Length: 337
Image (cartoon, rainbow, N blue to C red):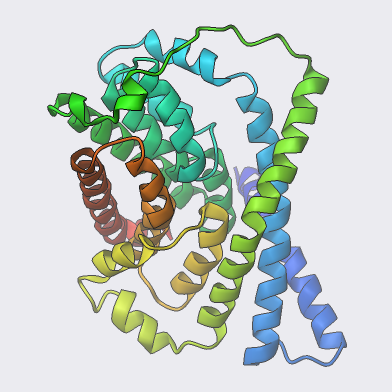
């Protein structure tokens, strides 16, 4: 048993968290005369370490997830979900969301396709909530920063939000809240062509390059903010706003996250820095969920597909769910970390 614990710790610390990389960078920066215990040197080390680590994880994860996703093109995904009914359909849609794109703006076109194909509205919303919030990338990245307990519970509660949110929308009289062009869109049921493993690998490689180009600027911004928070903002400030002293910290973090546009890769460094400065775990995770699920640009895109009433219901469900999850994580933080 002790051997298994050591293996798990090695995977967590040296493979996922890449602590060897942080040590190496610290030695290199010290060798060139930088004081890594100071603000400037510490910021540079934080920035280089997180950018390199997240970039490596990003490319590996996107390749793996894109390869898996090649087995679930839109047509096949629609067929799979159409076989399920009731809450099982919502669960399947939420699970399907874990192997689809890494941000809400990417998942909205798929949501439109599923809706125009005639899938129940609640089912498609379970997919829409799950896709940016709990993809496989978030699981691995959260493990690299917060450990396996936090990552697994985060994904589970994210799936619960997606399923419950979809069920609520399913029972509400909102069938007419979809824009007309989606209702009248023609749907062609075409089987996806068979492709080889080499083709899938090439498609995954192309997806890595395309996603990296789109996401990397947000990684740089997120890591930059994280470096500033980690080395320049006084700990007392963070604790007073997002720590246990402020019972409204979760609400504040959720509201602050909504106007931002990023994905899990860009929010992780900010979350890591906030937690190290004394912010509560649930407050930090609520911020991450708000950024990835309710960003302003994605809401503008979604408004093109659904009417204001349904958009408001969607935002309300997600916001309430995120806030509840934030307080839940704050209550069990002592168990997880």
